[in-house]
Length: 123
Image (cartoon, rainbow, N blue to C red; front, side):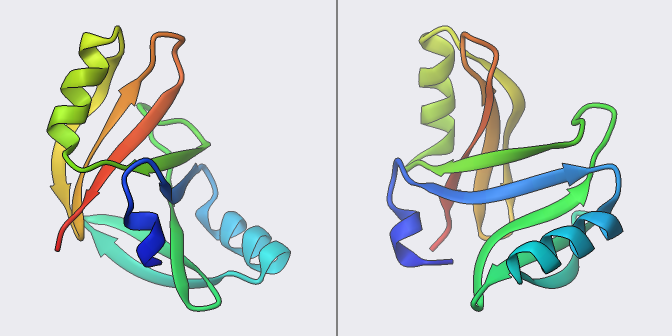
């Protein structure tokens, strides 16, 4: 990941949850020329997207809880503190803070109903 995306307040990752992972790989690979690397994260199949070798996002299967959509991640210094601040400001927690490879994340919902993921990088 590009170092400048690790600065708090910057969008750092984009993730597609889709009902057709194979179709999305083909579509976005051809549309943008993205490279794709397959892996498993927490028992879930995951595709890491790369542009010119730089990791920029991922693709995973949609679920009943998370319908097909693109979701953005914003870098924060402390996921737990930022989530608590969001709740204090009228937001809510959709996915509680948890550790994942390379950091910690949670998903919040703003008072207007839009969802956004918060991410703090490890190391």
